Length: 289
Image 1 (cartoon, rainbow, N blue to C red):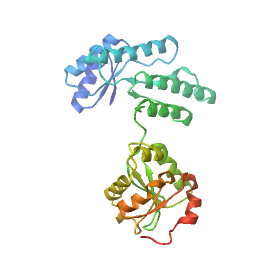
Image 2 (image 1 turned 180 degrees about the horizontal axis):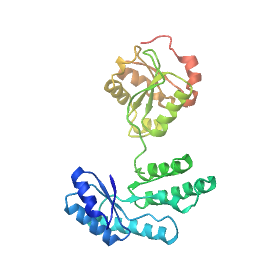
Image 3 (image 1 turned 90 degrees about the vertical axis):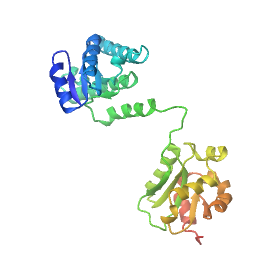
Image 4 (image 1 turned 60 degrees about the vertical axis):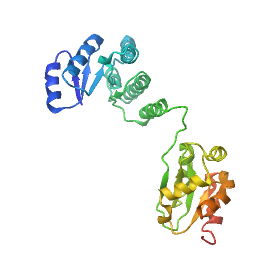
């Protein structure tokens, strides 16, 4: 992406963009000029356009920046002005321009702090692309957390893809655990297995992103769903035994799961943190069916 075409260089930039067929950012704090630039480039056949209305990091400049982002997004969506209905770019990195000598630790910390504040502001209203300088965890963690949450549909549980995962370095006689694709459940079980160095397979059943107990009660985690997952991911070809460990909260499914799958079903602990102790007493089972 070429950054950036403005009122002084737009002819030269347009020629480069058309020659090499690359995306371009258009820059102007004057929204009328930005609209004019966007119309000029789109009329010339340029489709991949990003608009940068300027990011001023302090005082009235920041307030005006916020106003421009809101006005642009409303014009593109509410007013139906397709001439400015393009992704918006914010440059929180400008926070580093107002904190003096960034070689001093205190100033660098202040700059990274304010950069994160500005980034969080425009994640909400309404930047699609950002240019950042800070790579420190204290700056990136709040930004990435906000992005992960603001683009999550609260009506849908956070989920992972179903499938068969390898934990550590499992062999064909390693245990096979079952869990649901609710993200919190999956990552808890995966972490408990990994941190305790239990080489195993973890089969993730698609339960519409619902946890074990609720999925059993609601009919998302069933013997048939477990059977379909076993067959879909050809688990028989991965392990030489036919023993499967279901969560303790799904204990009532053990009998019908054995009937549906033909596998020997073991009931694991209700809390995955207790899997190491459970393994000592229950794995390997006396017989594999």
